[in-house]
Figure (cartoon, rainbow, N blue to C red):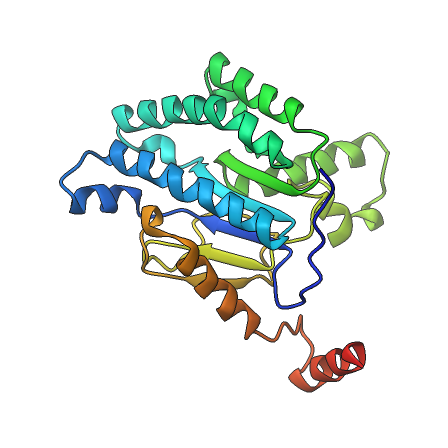
Length: 253
């Protein structure tokens, strides 16, 4: 399936999401937290479909942070089982929809079964171009940055680069998601207003949208609200509003 081009300048090319509120959704219904995570899968499935339909090129989901290992053992175990079952049940449909799956994070801590499912999903969808679905699992923004520092340090020690060649651009090339545009829109559900160690380098100029909606309740209307808000933003990247307005006016003309 060919890439669906997004020619609407008011739509983001890349959306990053912290899917927060599964546990609180379940607690409100007197259900175990695992029920909230299962309900959250439905919201995730629909968001992927919406991004593909709207022509958004990349979607990055914060599925499991490197700090989430500190949660109760039973919840972590349930999340790992849910990862495996969801991957295995959704992979064929995602492949048919032209979605390319990529996992970012340190997967070495996962079970061999989960690692195998991850590798199989990435291999099966590698040639798809309609939507890049990045799943951040056992990922942390600081981990990402430290890995980049280590990589550049090795290259410097081996004489492959000079100190002067260590630039922002060179550093960026060592990070996750280097082959994709930086996120235009960051969405966090569940009412919290923090980044939580997610894509720290990559979201330097990302528009940040926070909503009280709990993740299992994040539906079409909630996503449209975030997109409508994004469409009102003037992305200046350090320039003045007048400068950006002049450029946009010339492009429109």
